Length: 124
Image (cartoon, rainbow, N blue to C red; front, side):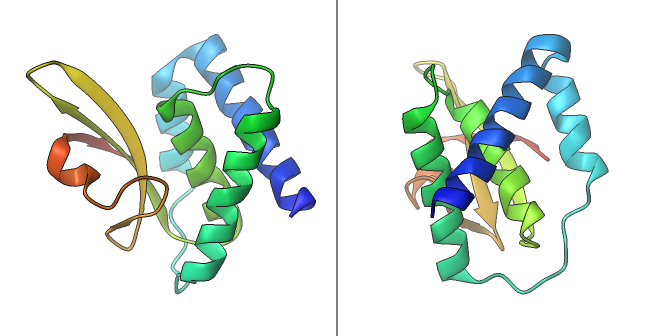
């Protein structure tokens, strides 16, 4: 688990660096450039990788927002040959936005009903 958490921390730091240097479009470009693999998803493997990102966020020196956390999760899942997608959604009243990760149409790093709360704006 420590090796997975170290990998997750690397992707979290990479995401933050991209956001700081070039903004969200750079993160989306990186996610779109590396196409989603076509491997069959392993639910247990995906849960372990999402948990590794949670551990990395705990040991990270600053609070990771949902966008950074989700982008790092997608990078880690794709590194392990799982076809993950970053989804960004918003609700109008009150205005809120949120990011989460889907694997084969299922939310993996958030509540399963999150798609009913937010309207999808972007998918990377």
